[in-house]
Length: 143
Length: 143
DNA sequence: TCTATAATATGACAAAAATCATATTTAAGA
DNA sequence: TCTTAAATATGATTTTTGTCATATTATAGA
Image (cartoon, rainbow over the protein chains, first blue to last red):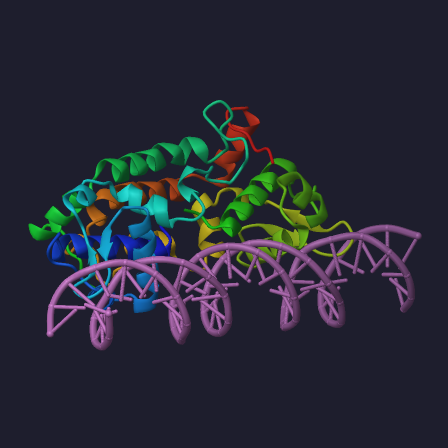
């Protein structure tokens, strides 16, 4: 469904949403533990996200990663867009070259509606939205 | 979503559904071309499916792969079950160890309903069903 | 301006998934 | 019974994805 990298990235971003702001930054070494992802690996993902302005960072002493208010408004899908190399989401369920409404593959009719709903959802839900649910105790972000 | 292998396997099985029966078998070399999958690779997948009785085979001259009437009754999901090594479908969307209705991860509420619908669909639809749609010209199975 | 501390950039390495190669077994037909 | 044609079993190779290591760059604070 989602690649490991995407899952890691989403966890890290949500962690930042819950534990950082413009004045309180978090260092990679303090992120990797709680979200249970190898430090060097999550560092790389965070760098990519930072470069693409999904999250914010500053280096040097007192530096670290954090989410600005603007960052928080972005959708969950925007995280996936950055991390996912191949766009599995947009491709045909059977990986046929020509597969669309006019010439659907056998799985298209069955699965496409679900898939497009999923994508629509991930695009419409912001980082902030998801973080709020965790804060309210409606959802959980354990190891 | 589905691994390449699963997609290849589904394509091959549908091809067999459309082009074989108990008296008309198809050799791997005559399958790989039409479905556009490397011969040696699809051979391996077909062998696995045959071992797990999703499809039928006989060796020697006049041998090949084919689908019996019983084979055709099986669900599309049964193909995936055989091929997919890791059960991506059953795991949490964020790969958290403990994630269920009682303690849902942030993505659970959003994505789980879709995911379970997809699985339910793939379990309820038989190979025969999908093949029929192609025969009726409602769906297509090109390269 | 110097030092320490943080991210960044780059690339090496490991594990998993996909692909390829080949020797063995089975069965049809002469 | 022999030959040939097919799947089967096994494992090697390649590619992709995930993981790790380290030298470089930027910045806060003394």
